[in-house]
Image (cartoon, rainbow, N blue to C red; front, side, top):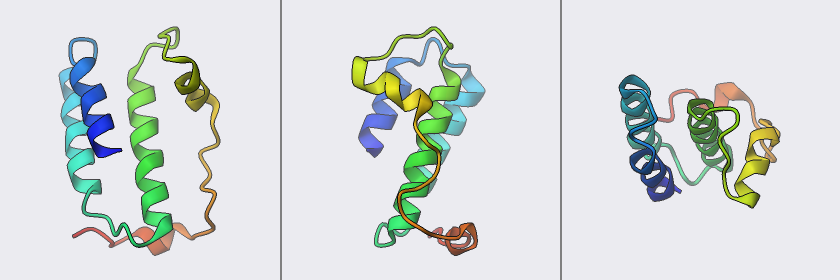
Length: 91
């Protein structure tokens, strides 16, 4: 997923404001330090990346068929966890 998110940032680099691009790259690198052993951390990382990438796209920007469904996907994790459990899990 990390490579995919970064690839998307680079492919769309002309259409993403520089500040948001820098934030996406920073977030991508930072979230790689999350504990991948914990399902909640991984789920939270993926949700954050999805939300940031999709929020940077225009509303009428068309993605591939399967990816368009991400715009309306639930932001709740399929795993049960408390947000407090993910705080402080950075490297």
